[in-house]
Image 1: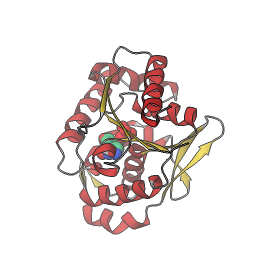
Image 2: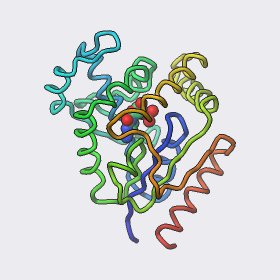
Image 3: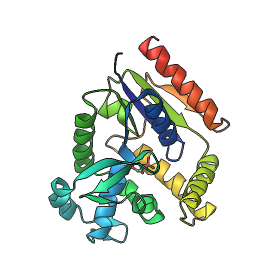
Image 4: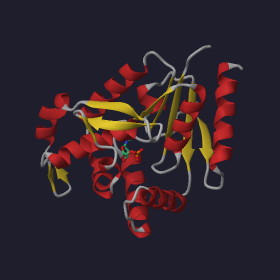
Length: 229
Ligand code: DC
């Protein structure tokens, strides 16, 4: 059967990762969480003292970027890929509030974006991949056969993030998370390079009032329509 690239972009905590993972599993595609790559680079910066308050030591990160190895390995327990930073499983650390707070400024850096976009293009060149992020349909794979833009209200997204963190045993306050969601929306959509933007040919899904099952069914339908089956 014809293999395609499926680009899923949208706001943070819009549920796009869950949708993308479920779809990939269902149709036997590889799943790539590009947000996890920006998060892992941010964790590297924290671990190596590259932050001075909110500011990043750009020169230090520039010198290190080619030595940051990112990979994904399937976690047999969850059935989903875990993120590895230089060979170490960092899946839990990259989902915490410290990384969430610092990731947007890292993701605005042009040299970071160029390095990660190149890796993503390499990982997707054989097709048969579902990639989720912010700039997949606009920058990474502008020719993707199926492009989706997923969104929901900031309040719905903050509630989802709190539930997700709590399920992983990471305590979180709703107000703090809501603030973080809004701040990230702003930085993500106003940055110069690879801003969060809906591709002209993307299908838009506002899932504020949809169940996971409804989203899954809708997405599967779009996939079948695209491949013509
Ligand atoms: O999807 P997420 O919340 O895990 O993404 C984490 C951060 O990385 C978010 O602030 C936006 C940024 N990001 C990006 O700039 N480009 C991508 N392709 C994916 C994520």
